Image 1: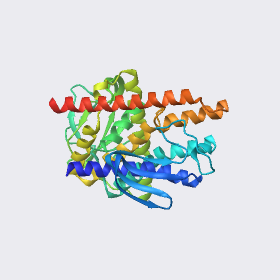
Image 2 (image 1 turned 90 degrees about the horizontal axis):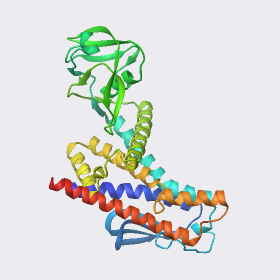
Image 3 (image 1 turned 120 degrees about the vertical axis):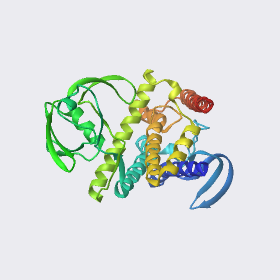
Image 4 (image 1 turned 180 degrees about the horizontal axis):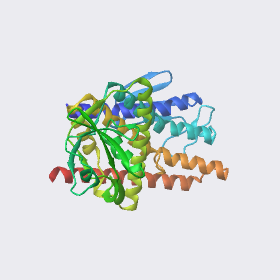
Length: 350
């Protein structure tokens, strides 16, 4: 069942990504010859409105084949107003960007649904308290629920941590304990900590950790839009930073995951709840959008860079350069895929 869920989720994400390219291409009058979910041998195909819609044997991606554009033949030239290579560079950029953009839109839609259905988060309930910390000195106890800091309502542990980190000076905590509301003045201190990439940082803290208690937050449609926007932007920033840290060597290459890891994550989420499955699907959709914008020649981002070069230089890259960089891009992608699979196998044996 987990494998089926994985394939359905991946096919759905690929379809939405390619639908972005397809929609933009049709808008500019480019003929789309093939819309494929999967690679390799064709399993099923149907022609509709000038496009062959097909499912292929290897369901680990997909593509739209436009007239005048073929990554396997990067120097291809085809004549006609409906040819991709005869469109202005800015139009090609829009067509290329539309795929990743569709993934961001899909993620926002999924986050919106999660917000309406009920988003699960850690409750702002105190678990452990560090000895001699500002929280202990102020009389904070295990099980206390933080309702408000200064004039800001606190609904989740994430909000609590963010507000303390970004604050200045002493803070007024409104705390619920045994059905009573208490007010405590706490001045955070600067302490050593680690961020999500395990880098050593300094941040404002009061010396508390959360209790293992989940709270479900239901949003109205207006606040759900804000939630969806914030989560999509936050996820995008996290993935961009992750790529940056990987290039810098801060994140080891052993952390790269392949299709096995993705499949396991999706399978585990599907067994947990529909909300968890929607959340991981949204995150993978953002991941797909961000990674496709990287300036690697075989990806959308690489082709966007070629077109930006054409706008600036007022000429296309030479066929030899275009061919060399495209092949180099495919080598990079294949290497990353093999590394991900190698790491997946290592994790399975461990």
